[in-house]
Length: 65
Image (cartoon, rainbow, N blue to C red; front, side, top):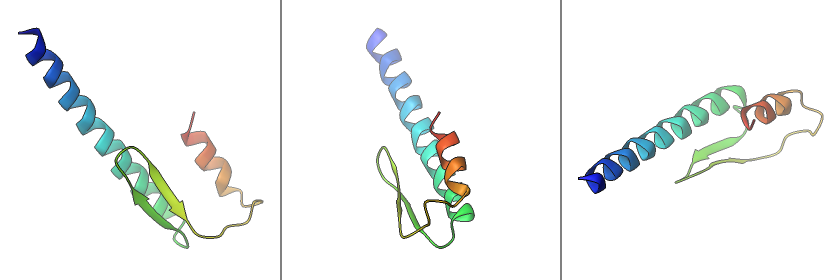
């Protein structure tokens, strides 16, 4: 019985992680249209070039807290 509860909890957690990654990808694509943004199993990957002085990078940093 406990293994069923654990499996359900794991499934809920995985679904929440997928949702959070998808939402993060959408927000980052909107904020950084010049970058390629993709979601992976447990990460969001940004590819492209952007200035280190770009103020939007602080916004990304705030998402990591």
